[in-house]
Length: 171
Image 1 (tube, one colour):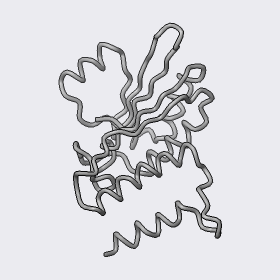
Image 2 (cartoon, helix red, strand yellow):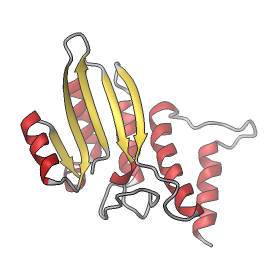
Image 3 (tube, helix red, strand yellow):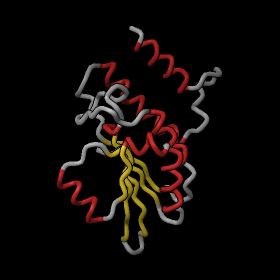
Image 4 (tube, helix red, strand yellow):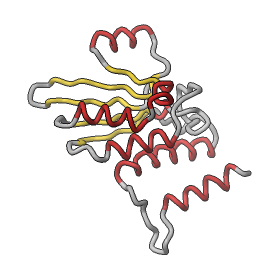
């Protein structure tokens, strides 16, 4: 499965291309589609070897003048950080990886849309669901809210949620 499906489209001609970041588990049909459509894939191993900043820069260069849509598949994260998903596969991306990608993509001049998929609150306990939602929130905040959201008393919601998550993980 993939962390990001990054679509670059010329909406006037319906010509789209796609990059997949965080690919780990493609079935034979998916592999065939990726090959036939010329979709560039970056595995979690590629992320470790090349670095997420470098991968993001390559994608940004390729997409600079095109509208951009980002689809974030939560099951691309390791199950240790996002357990409430239907297809958990080990050795995935980290929250830090997707935050780097989000911060880089926030710079794209034609970012048109973002979605987050594959969160399943019916799977796992309350802590698993909280942890998965929090990972998705951190990704979204990395794109849209670089400085955090402040509660009016000097603490950001990011800080409050981090403290809550850390205190829950120590129980």
